[in-house]
Amino acid sequence: SDTVLLNERPSVTKKAFSIQLKATRSPIDVRKVFPGYEGVREIVAEDGFYKYFYGEYNSIAKAKEALIDVRKDFNDAFIREVNIPINK
Image (tube, rainbow, N blue to C red; front, side, top):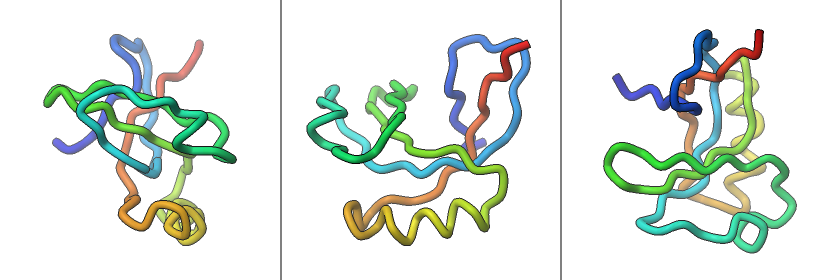
């Protein structure tokens, strides 16, 4: 599956859509690289890449809407399905 888990061992998750802004081999300064983007999450993937996600959308349509603006800054950004931990 191509789904990314946004937390190590969550007890309960929900599916959502997020925009992947970038993937790098080493960590980057989120505030410098993504100015104006609040709440960017850094995930270390199994392949060793650092992946940077923005936004949390419960429908692909909403994610696509947001992607239009994001692509003005990051033209290779794309939508990923993610598992969001739910706090009980």
